Length: 185
Image (tube, rainbow, N blue to C red; front, side, top):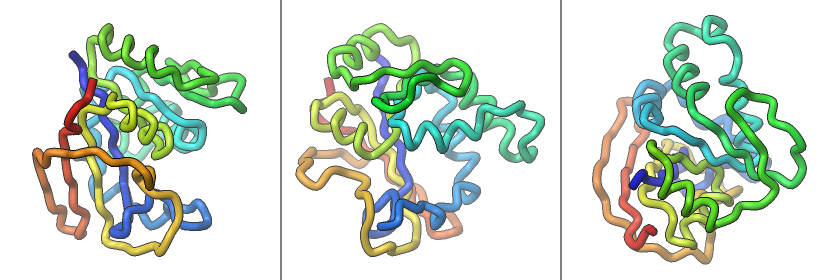
C-alpha cells in the first residue's frame, strides 16, 4: 500500500512558522535537490489552504524557473493535488481540486487505491492525519534557527511513537530526520 508522508521544515525549537506567520528563515535551496527526490514518487499532495497558496508558485511554465528549480517544478506539477479549504472555491493550479472537509475515511480509501505515495502538507492537516494513525512516515528538516514561538510542526496534545529510519546532515547545518510512524493504517 502506498505511504502517506508528512514532510516539513522546522526551526530548532519545532516551529513551521514564527509568531507573525513567516517562514522566511527556511532556505529551501539548502536541500532543494534532496527534497525533489523525496517528492518524485508522490502521486498526490494533500494541502491545507495556506500551504497550497504558497506552493501554487510552482505551477508556472517550467522554463520560467532558474535551471536548478526546474526539476522540482516538473515533479510538483505532475502530481495531483487536493486542497482542503472552507474558503477557497476554485483551484488556481493544474491537477488540483478543492474539498471542503478533511474526511478521514476518504483518505484511507485514497491510500488503499493509490498507485503512488501521498504527501500531506500543512501542520494542522498533518496533525489530524497523525492523530488518526494515517501517516506512515515523517520527514523533518530541522533548520539551524530558533524562532521562539509560532505554529508548531506537531500538535501540542499529539502523542505518537516514531521509529528513526534515517538521518542526514547538510553542510548548512540543516538536519533531515526520517521516521516511521508506528501504528499507521
